[in-house]
Amino acid sequence: MTESQHKIHVLPEELCNKIAAGEVVERPSSVVKELLENSLDAGASDILVELQSGGKRLIRIADNGSGMHRQDAFLSLERHATSKISSDEDLFALQTLGFRGEALASIASVSRFLLQTCANEDGLGQQIYAEGGAIKRAEEVGLPQGTVIEVRNLFFNLPARRKFLRKEQTELSHVADVVTKQALANPAVSFRMKNNERMLLDLRREKGLRERFAAVLGRSLLKDMLEVEQQGGPDLRLTGLISQPQLNRSAASHIYTFINGRYIRDRVVQHAVMEGYRHLLMKGRYPVVALFLELDPALVDVNVHPTKHEVRFRDQGLVHDFIANALQQTLRPSDWLTDRDEDDVAQTASVMPTPVAPSEYRPATLGAPSQMREAAASYQPVSSTVSHPEPVPVSQAERLQQQPQPVEQLVLPASEPHGFFSGLKILGQYHQSYLLCQDGDDLILIDQHAAHERIGFEKLRASYAEGLVPSQSLLFPEMLELDFRSATALEESAEELEKLGFDIEPFGGKSFALKAVPQVLAGRDVGRLVIDVALELEKVGRAGQLQESIDEILILMACHGVIRANQALTTEEIKALLRELDRIDFKAHCPHGRPVMQRLTLTEVERLFKRQ
Image (cartoon, rainbow, N blue to C red; front, top):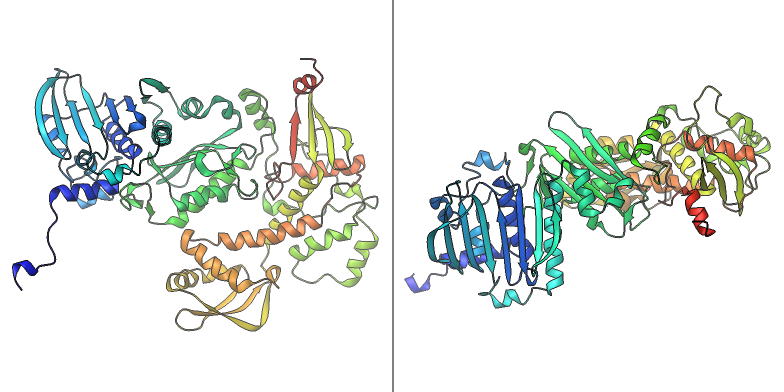
């Protein structure tokens, strides 16, 4: 084969840099992200971001970090030159935000690039100017300690790429989002951001996350935010702020998650956050969250994607469950006094009733008295089915229908302390659907159906979790055909699925025989459900999809067996309902995510009547 016939050749260095830039630099916000990470790694405590035309004409970032000496300044513009790793072991024990060493070289290759840096306090620094990756001039200049980088005319030498940039306001919003994320993760650092000489962000150094959160996202949100601090062993810790369910958004744009100080957009973590809010938010609603996960760097690989937004955990199931459980533990004690100041909230939290453990739950016995339009039998047999695998004798069922449980048997013992709901003053019932109560000077409205639905659901779920799940054998086994990854996930979780009432046997290759299903899933398309479970297991390592399906059925059972709207209740029945609310967790919302309670302060009521 002659030289001219060779089809494989080495790409020129200039083209390699442009390809690398395509991976790292997507738009002005990508440049800002990389430069901010370098500033933070350099120990900067003061960072200024200046833009023109949303970053399309100019990006200028100045910091007071450690700066660079002459030789390091030149090396920083070489591909894969970095001070942050020196061996493959370092790659799996990263303590810095940047590490790949291609950022400055990639940015310089697609812009008119100016680097000014000084690594000492004597005022003598280096200035390097490059166009399209080629250094045009370098000189010594007088500078304070720190680094200034100017990126002009981004993609000037890639006109096709420049056409993909959006209008100024769009690019500016992306840059602001990047600065916001870094500001949340680094409250001790001052961030300022200008566009066309107009100051858009001026965030001073703060002592903690709450102060920085208020400055970035709004102080009015703080009263609805809960602090998270959970330890999952020596190498796993979760801190941050999460919103109470009543504070939510229509998109996931306010879910900020960080791993070892690095902002990440990871599907496992995102799924875990939403799992923590399961049955507390309505469909299509998302919480406001700023969460910081700290773990041994060796347990997570951040070198999955050039943007470093995605990560890979060594044990993603462990991380997923730790985050979900931490959020559920934080959300469990409902804070009902959201209109009061933080001191009042703290005092209220100290006297809130201790959540009752699932093992202490009574069977779902909030049956309706004879005056109710809905007989007790419509609710009681449902809970009996879940609590007791053995069938209820016909004579016993008949007795339940003939003798509804009197209200007196539902009243809690006098020795049991009153909770928030049982301590309310009952005013009456509005439209036979809403309970009117008084808490101090505040008017409390409670949706009776939503409240009882939550009670029924929590008790049914607790009963389901306490006992062995009864299975129902299929007359004819159903054959399942899976792909290799789903089949592997299913095999690895066979023991867990068996505990949940499934009997699944390998049938050679990637085929399985489904021989029995949980009784509560009888009559559903369970074969399809098992395939969905396998896909879910592949993603997060746990049967979240299965639990959601079981919960949907328990919600349906609870909804059909509880107090309805447009149903008259006596005072004693209202008292019994309020006492039951105090015995359960997650009482803020019904299982569908609708609020159980609303509060009107005296000031708000007086304002309605023009007395304020």
